[in-house]
Image 1 (spheres, rainbow, N blue to C red):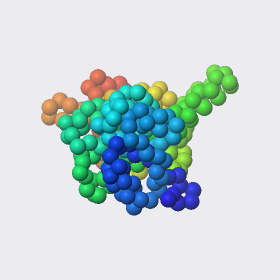
Image 2: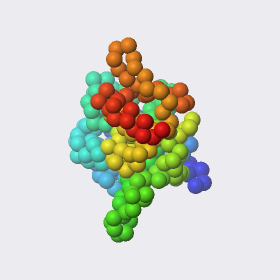
Image 3: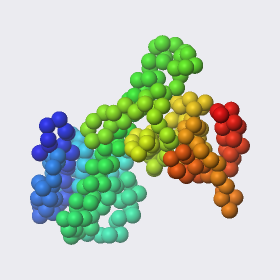
Image 4: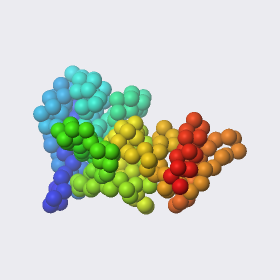
Length: 268
């Protein structure tokens, strides 16, 4: 059951074996903030259940009557699938499962600890996905507001706040407090002091929406606040890096080194 004010993770269990479904139900019963939205025993039933119930998480058997678990993903579309944990007795399916964006996979028979690990990974994925949705809504709202108001003044054309959703709570992070941003797969991680917030947004989009007089993209996977940079470093192999005032070191693209030096001279 979910605690007051905290949404439960809604789970669909898809497996043609009754004992396998019961095993997952028993394990989920021990977990807080989990709700079993439904069960399915064939591939077509699973497709219908995903479309009708819209669960947050699916435990999906790879081999089922009518359609395989992989065919279920293809029918729904990888981008539209909920977080998915494949269950299979055939380890060779694992790679194909991850190719279809599975959060994790469980090889039968699995123990309680391995199940709990997969569920934790799924919860984290769901939190990041929700954070991404909230951030995309914020960007869309800001863009719509700018279109209604007409061309923005230079001071207001860049992001001042970024919305972050974590553990069911919405937090607004002031851009002025961000030290640097790094890419992590499809997510961007905002580093604010000793805290890190993940949003589902492309680095290119963030680079375009941040004030270039304040932030600089030093590498394809890193954007840094200029006044947080302490030193430019050069490694023995000819690679470059920057050291921030808190001691963090980040790679610096050779092609961006000269531009960064000019930025720092102008900034200081």
